Length: 397
Image (tube, rainbow, N blue to C red; front, side, top):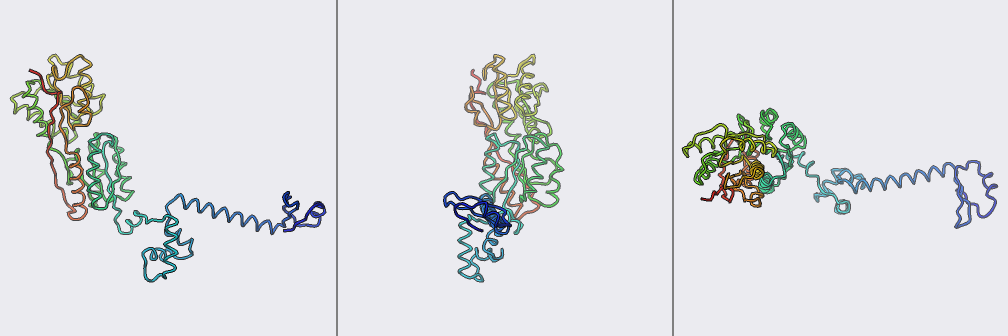
């Protein structure tokens, strides 16, 4: 690099045959001229400078690995790993440098990578029909409490009541290296081949609430038969004789159990089963409304209706009111699952409360028994429910 002060710029350029770049420094009143080699060195140094900045930015925005630390210090990955564990084979000075760099770079071990090395990722996949309702949120909380006691955490996936999404969730969770699954089936699920690979490979698999038939797997459910029998008896004790049931898809286990409880409850109360008083829906509010309209269009109205869940009961409540009928004076109403909304609607809704948190805990406990001890475990846990009586089902005499 050559510098020429003051005038004579053109003359200076003629003297420099290999000039490739020049600029005028106004502060110092001088001309600075580079040869091609000098200019190349400058560009090379600048590029390296920006590469270093880019690397630092990238490292600051992503998880720092052992390889990053090793490259920065010019040592092997195994040396870094041993130094972070205070291995005696690594000198105290090098250990100090490595640990200081790890702290400055916010390094922390990657639990997934560590888990893969040990064939243990500490992750459980949980598949539920939705993550909006309190029912499933409370069950997930129960699962997470037990999981955390074992040092595990959950990856939650919602099927959105779609069998296709449920199949995709199973595949995606297995790709994420979960150690097993805890599942509530979607309302569309009629066959269970997407779980065959897990069962064949003894991957821990537990079902709750909506469970498959014919699979040799552990399950957690509530006693739906007894719960519905209690509802029928409650209606009967309050003077109801034409008791209707808005049920769910016939292939679901919860539907089958509650239908059975309905017919047995009627028989115990000395009432005959009438086919027109049992109506099915697909569990959506719109279909529940259509089912309620069908019941309210009967020549002889029902004097009591209960829904397979609270969502169905809320839809029926809305339609009953829309048609100018009173609850419970004209039609008594009961739900199932006892969502929070049951206490704020008018009138407050009588409903069957589930031990949702305990369902989650029981499912997780079965999971860990299957994971750690009993590979062929297929225990069925059945929990009790409670009928919470409110104003919607007590007919005034």
